[in-house]
Figure 1 (cartoon, protein in one colour):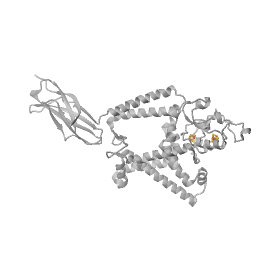
Figure 2 (figure 1 turned 90 degrees about the vertical axis):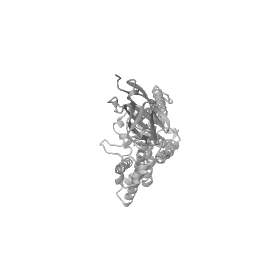
Figure 3 (figure 1 turned 60 degrees about the vertical axis):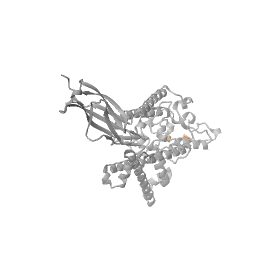
Length: 464
Ligand code: SF4
Ligand code: SF4
């Protein structure tokens, strides 16, 4: 009989011995309805990841996170440093979403859409099975001496792993600098794009290390989301769970007539398929990435022993204990309201955001300058942000007929996704200055269309 009060398994992670040595996990090949569904979903996710950098709108990439030049494109919308408030709000909304989602559905993200799990289980693990066979053959191969066959299998596997890691590294680069720049980096001599080349090599090296060696340790040791589970999950959270009420006391399979045990026949298949090497029958654990492999494995066993499926299933602890269905808690309501408010604010801000943002201020310091030709000038500062992918020629006009506009420097033309800082003078004949402070309207036209009107002031000398 299992002692469910014994929590000593939580004192260490399943893939590290008490002496601190790594326990290599050889999960058995999986199959089943959840595995099939995850495989199909992974095709879509991988297609999205690899094809999206090639998708362009008006010659510009669809998604871009160029941290170096502080340019971001999300689904065709350009964002720059001036949109930091949107970014910050988006991050907050994202975290509320994650918290809400986790409080309700546990680590469903990890099992179904996390790139680490998708690549590890749906790409690298499948290649490993193809080359080295199922868990038992892999174990035997690792324990065997270095024969020609072993060297061949291990070499081919590592070459393919490295190739895929390089492909992922290049793809990551396309999300940072765009597909055109990435193609230049990989098609021209490294010396011409040294930093880009080094970045791709570093990314590829990290991916190779993670998927060939580090594997599930990324989820259990490094991932901060995994670490947060302790505070995000509650007894009402839906997780991959073993129904201990139905399964215990576990015992070897017997005929129905002789049966004195629960439904768990202690076959250990749920443990054998687990990619993080845990026994889900202990209860919810930090290492569980909700990959559903144990559900599929146990369902197969239940089919064989003619007992109902779902001994391991998506369920909450309270649901299993009290045999109650999922219920909406005050915490879920609170998070949901917060998320709806944040998303509404974010959507509104993005919708009302203007394509060209303009800010005009009178320059600090000297208030006015006597030009010596009977004119007085004030210096102004104009900052313009182009949130579009087009060149925007800009023209500045003044509403006051006596005021004259004089740009300092060359003509203003906004480059795509550019921030431009310029200065201009406003000149006024001294004899036309009747008051010290004169209201001034500065109008900015783009392609002949008024896009901004700023009310400011012109300061003249004090009348004697
Ligand atoms: S697969 Fe099912 S029956 Fe077998 S040990 Fe796990 S829970 Fe028990
Ligand atoms: S316990 Fe089950 S769901 Fe959790 S990681 Fe292991 S196999 Fe996946």
